[in-house]
Image (cartoon, rainbow, N blue to C red; front, side, top):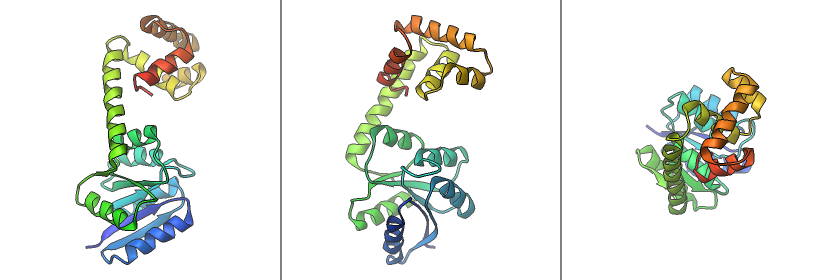
Amino acid sequence: MPISLVLADDHPLVLNALEQLFAVEGDFAVLARCGDGGAAVQAVREHRPDILILDLRMPVKHGLEVLRELKNATAATRVVVLTGSFDDEDATEALRLGARGFLLKELAPDLIVQCVRKVHAGEQWIERGVLVRATEKLARRESGMREVSRVLTARELEIVRMIGEGLRNKAIAEALSISESTVKLHLHNIYEKLGIDGRLALLSYAHDKGMI
């Protein structure tokens, strides 16, 4: 059985190059080509490919949104991230969301094929520099969360995460079905417990602890 693929990149030239690369190998089958993240999610759900090759910087849905949706849907498809450059934050989150391969587009074509074969066989393929930085950040995030969890309540942690996502008090209140005054009270308590002064200081603290 050929290894079935869905290709997702917003550059037609990249899609063409990838399709030609796998066509000459003989044991791959490209089931769909997608120019945006929404189409990628739909194609994976429809075709259930062995491998999704995914660019992170996609229109409609960012690659991380695609990974998050597929993870929540418990899709069996393994994901190889293929991108022009790696941002440490994106690489860390992609690793947390279950991506099995990380590749730069500048790599030699035979390495791309080799990566896909290994991921299909159940292995990981992550460039060393990306792996080291992402693993260190994950460890720092877990350590930071353990430390902060000893100080803040579950609701307070939830609010800190929402602050990290850029939500204002009104949006937080609506999401949690509480009043804005209650959000402000929670924030006051968070500032007191952490010994910080204000929203910007909270964002800096949460970033230092790897929470956002």
